[in-house]
Length: 144
Image (cartoon, rainbow, N blue to C red; front, side):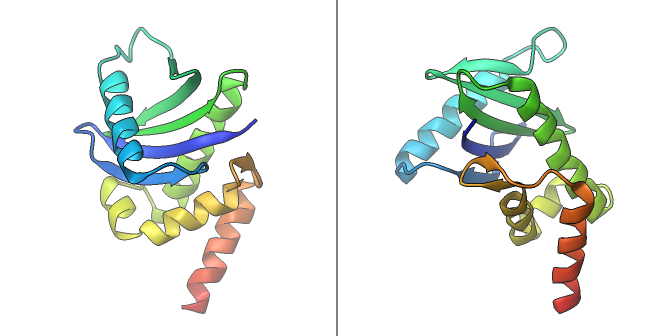
């Protein structure tokens, strides 16, 4: 089970968070982001699942208000576990920022990446305890 990348896009396709776990160029990243946004924004979210095939991989995504949180995984991985990890990520952000919004992602990006680094290590699950991650975030805040 390995994550290729995790991105968060708003409805207009603006990139808010991106974490890449493989080495590709910036041009390739922009092309991938454009393709992913085009693919996901055109789907009927009421009638279609949160999983879609993409370049011999799978995209697992969830929409929260105006943001799409998207994880690209290997085609043989379990989609439901990644759907839950997206939900856990958003729950942690929601608890930490008290009702997270798009502006929190923009202006507190360093804290977002800290949460991602606590959840994943080299594209693999590292920590799944919401309380432990929030405790570590609060400890970092006390150091400032």
